Image: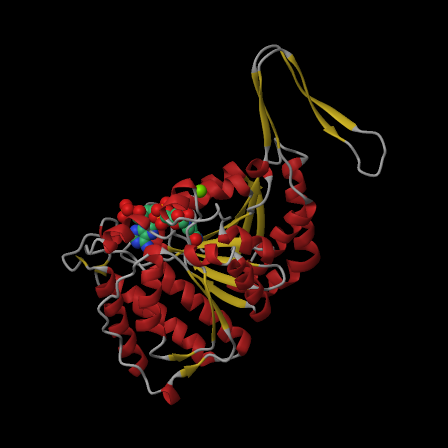
Length: 422
Ligand code: NAP
Ligand code: MG
């Protein structure tokens, strides 16, 4: 696949002795299509001129995953475990069409799923808030983070249609002997449908730990909601595990940090969130999290205004953008047309990763660089310079103007240079 080079006007680099030193290794995972193009621009123009970094680079480009029988993905996940912090570009999850398009030997698994399984992690998605991009919900002043339990429930269900009258049962056969347990689901008088699903205590405990850890790290309240009045055993188990984890391991830490844990029913939480100011973590079961994270993302105007972080209960952490590879824009780019694709989520993935590195390494200069990078990006949007996706949702102003991908990054680069020298 051909990637033409973009005309480069890279910000003037600092002499290497003046660069800010990132003490420990960063694990970088490159990706596909338009996200890959923006990734390189962000690195070349916003990071490399100012930072001296030891990067362990893994190329998760779809052709390289194919060439390595996807070993590169597992290697990258192991590197995150070794070094603690990683940053990942969006990657193609192949389907039948992609297998043809890229002439792949196999329909490779989603890299995100592979990494999530190896890190045993929970994904937190958080919106990027700028004052002139109004969320559709006017009370939201601070970002809302969604923690989705991406394991089990309807996503690994067993389901069937029944075509005739008959009896459907739940049956559990203990592995070590003992008598099977049966429950009648329904005596069908005619055709219908049945679904069986499960979760495990272990996975729910991991999820709960990751949520408490993230809320404490960010110093924000944690809400957890389910429907335990209806699913008293199933959702009740989630509620009890969260409650136990809170009481045993977090209650005092939360009190010291001035934050709280709050359980409520999913419908009550949905009603309350519409009136809240935001600034909280909302932990949700798999299906609820799938639905609510898309609702929150779209209420914030654009998929590109949302970052995503994978937190493992053992403390490993991986930052990425919540959007995909932006395929349609990439095809335009390949045809030589102008693209106005938004790199904000990629910039925030890098700043998040650098800030975390700074915290672990105790290098405040790296943390301060991450802050300035975010301020430089946010103030450019606030000044009305924006990509196409934002123009349609921004507060109307004569100062607003749409720029292309590279011009947007150049404007941020100039702003960053001023902030760093001032
Ligand atoms: P997508 O890349 O998220 O893009 C969907 C649409 O959202 C785009 O066509 C664009 O809308 C808008 N959009 C997303 N990011 C944008 C940005 N940064 N700036 C401006 N607009 C943006 O999803 P997709 O096209 O469905 O998926 C493409 C590939 O991404 C797939 O192969 C999928 O497997 C992969 N994917 C990867 C990840 C990941 O690695 N984390 C996540 C999701 C999807 P307009 O066309 O209307 O401008
Ligand atoms: Mg969804």
